[in-house]
Amino acid sequence: MPDECVCYNLVLHDSKLLSAVVATSSCALYSFALKGLAKRVVHTSVVQLNKFFSVCLFSSKDLFVWHSRTVNGFVLQQIDGSWIFLTREADSDIFTKTVMLSARDLLHHCHFLPCKNSCFGINKRNDLVVNGCPVIRHVGSYSVDKKHLLTVTFAPQTASSKLQIFELEDILKPVTKEFDSKRSRAVERGALLIGHETGGCRIWMQMPRGNLETIYLRQLQLRKLKELLDTCCFREAAVMMKKHRIDMNLFYDHNPEHFMGHIGQFVDDLNCAELLNLFITSLNDKDVTMGMYSDSYNQCRQQTVQSRATKVLQPNKLFVQLVCTAVREHILSRDESTVRELYTTVISTYLKENPPQISKALLELRKKSLKFHNGIELEKKWTAFVSMLAPAADLFRVALQTYDLNLALAVAQNLQMVTFFALCTTSHAWHIGKWQCCLF
Image 1 (cartoon, rainbow, N blue to C red):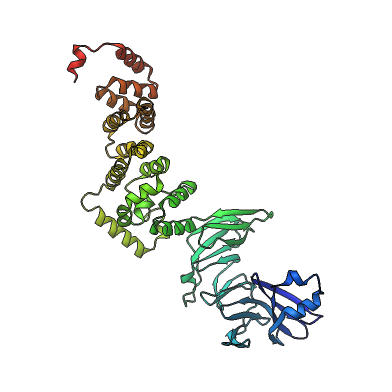
Image 2: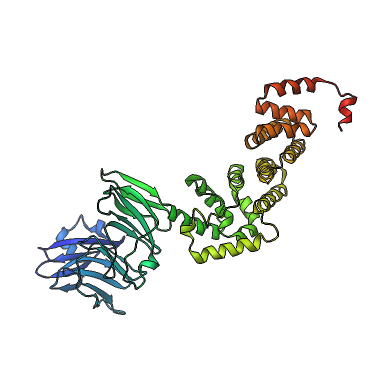
């Protein structure tokens, strides 16, 4: 590399290779090998070291302002706004120059996506330019991966900016119209999009005051959940739904046939009463892929989900009862220790049915508690759980209808009903008489 030069636009490709634009009387693209750099720096000067490790790949009289690595070469932007490809010839270190785009506006914040062979940048009018065509106006910053394009746009005379997300396939279609995403989120005006997690749902932004913030965009969360549900990673999906308050009906509505076919795996994978209870209590007859999350499911996908749901629920449209029964039967088929840990979910399945099976839930928990050595403690715990989900007046009335004073007493204790508690306590102290025997 020349002794007197200006080196800029350094790009680190991996731990062993670095490239940069070097300007002297002409402009050149250099490659630097970093292997062995730490061992030799003690014994030689920087100039000698650069001469030994640097390689000139391409030179031209035209000035380069930006470059990036491609699969088999480099892409460069010249000072006149034109883009060129440098392609390495087979079994050779010689690069062939190919003009990709003719001279246009000079772009900044450039990015090259090798998998799509596409160039991105922002021109002086703040238009996002893709392969030479302006597609989105008033763009301050952007981030792109293999599937999505995210932008922060600032419309004139507005107090805030918009964080928007686009499908990359739609952006790369050969159309001349400008895009305006319906999926957007208001952010502080002047916020800068640093980047986003590829394959994840985190977005990093720098606010005008300089602080860095992490944002979880709902569309990226739903994209991640689709992948988890398709691959039966139910526990990871459930934890994510709980953390970000996403409707757990998506477990079923995403693909009804797939979910009902793997409902046993679903219960075993979660294996947590808290997560299973959240799922059961959130069940309703509304399809979230047609409602609140319809933007993340295109029309074709909606029709597929609707047809599958119709097919699965053709015998009876009460899919809530169908799911509750399947979950309950699978839990009860497991060993006793697992049933004890997940029995609150069994109770939830009874109470979620329409109408709620309060009487059956109380009788079954009473019967199940007698099978364990700490049955009294379990009965109190499970009765307290029922009292949180069932209406107080209905619960005590149903408990009395079971003609089990011990059960009615436990319910009264949890409901703190002073009048009925005193009556149950007095009745509990009575001896069995003819009137009590007649009840059975």
